[in-house]
Image (cartoon, rainbow, N blue to C red):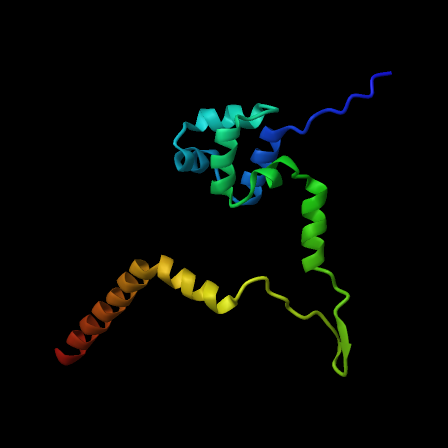
Length: 140
């Protein structure tokens, strides 16, 4: 009887994590400077070069160890901790309190900073629209 333990399929882990992050192979390929076909081949491989694995881990926002130890079961358990309906009892009944692992205000500011140019363009479009409508009103 053969009792050897099959090594984890690192490529499959990368593919699954990438999918969970909502990232396409092409986006990951561009981020680490390879072709989409290379990412496809990496995801089919049981092992991945340490250098490439470090680049991929960085782009996926994870550690190399997290990729190596990734399992679907751990993901399910992780998310179940967020959606546990045990809540706490109060005079208003059973409710689930929100516990953030981040500061929502910092996330909002970060989002604004990332999209500042878009917001400026939208604001300018609204100003142009108001000016146009005022012009139409004044010509009546």
